[in-house]
Image (tube, rainbow, N blue to C red):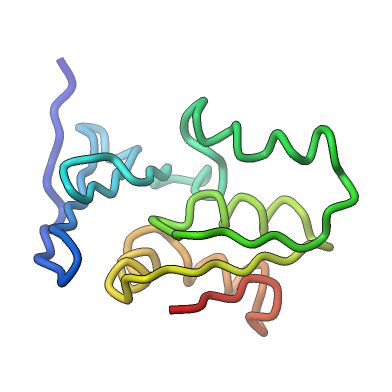
Amino acid sequence: MEKYRLVEKIDDNYSVIELIDNQNNIIRVLKSQNSNQSATYTDERKYQLYDMFSNLYDITATFKNDVSKVLMLGGGGFSYAKYYISKYSNKTMDVVEIDKRIIEVAKKYFYLEDLYNEYDKNQNRLKIFN
């Protein structure tokens, strides 16, 4: 049985946010309302999608590869946004996230700041609207 470690618990205006790492500190999960909202690798794979469900987001690229701009409602840990911006250098994404604390959590614990530093220094490919 895999053990988990609570990284931080945040009582937010919208919900209680929990950040949980697995026993080996390889996977970090963002939980809100007792439900997994997002997951990320905590190692060199931090821009890859973690689970099979998340990989379904990218299915549109298989059928419609000429899409250059995407709108995402709800950022969560921004797992898909990180993947999208790191994989497609000629594409952009706008994300609308209602909860400012979720954006802060994504920057601090889900490598969103790293993404900007490595792939979008001017923050013109990934725009976040709160």
